[in-house]
Image (cartoon, rainbow, N blue to C red; front, top):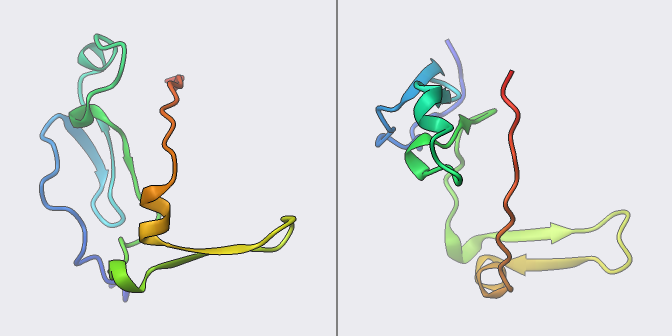
Length: 96
């Protein structure tokens, strides 16, 4: 039995996914014909690959620190991150 806490896992999982593992959650589109019929993957067909439990993060307490091999380290709040410019990038995923 795992000592990890998976209580924050989303419960509204799309029925269009084939579940390989529940904890940590690992699922992929059930019907590849539907998956490839869209130029941009809709949310109900997006792969789900967790490598551990989803943490319980309090937005007001959240901090992301960037340091190490960077010229200028910094610490960001969740509000800082949400206010940053956003860029959408279209990528391809090759399925074997």
